Length: 232
Image (cartoon, rainbow, N blue to C red; front, side, top):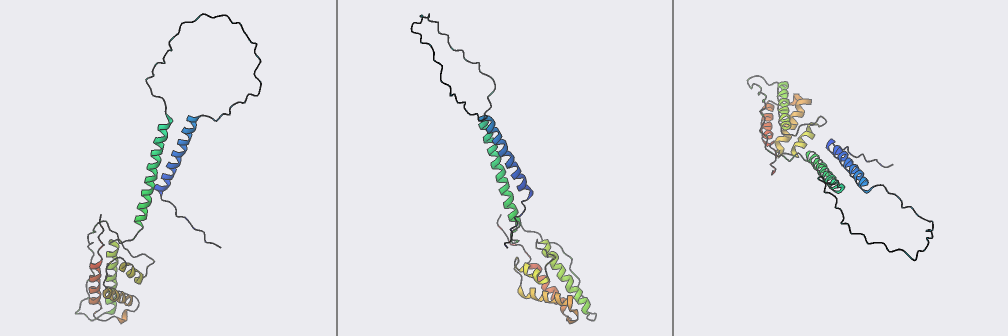
């Protein structure tokens, strides 16, 4: 059994344009039909013409003086020309079709690759998580909280750049999506991802230098989150 293809619903500008185009076509057809008039069949005369008497001798009639034709007075207003209206309706139809095409191209461009950026976006000012105090004894739970805070800082920067983490994305899928858009360093990316996964699910295996390593990886990745320049 074949799979039925579901056509996408056109956006509101396209639907409005289609309604306008249909109205213009119907109006133009009505005006053209009114200018042509009803289609009336020509009556057929099947009867034979009557036989008229032949007159051979007719009296000579006097010649009447020639009367010049009387010209009709010129009216001040112009007569209605349906052709002009049809051309106006055709121009409106063409404009509506152009607007529909522009709306479709704009919608297609908005759904394209996230690599395209029209202008540079200033770096958002995001608060950085404070490093754990090195004078205190190492606490794996505190180190895990710091790694998670660094990861969330990276997500906030990516969202400000237009590439947020979607709800259905795993951490690995999110990192892969960022790598498809930005020039991320592979070592820093892999190390931060490993530290984040260990902080979430196995924080007891974290080492004493975990916070310093997480901070260094995030600084490298945050610097790389710069949109690609696109010519205007």
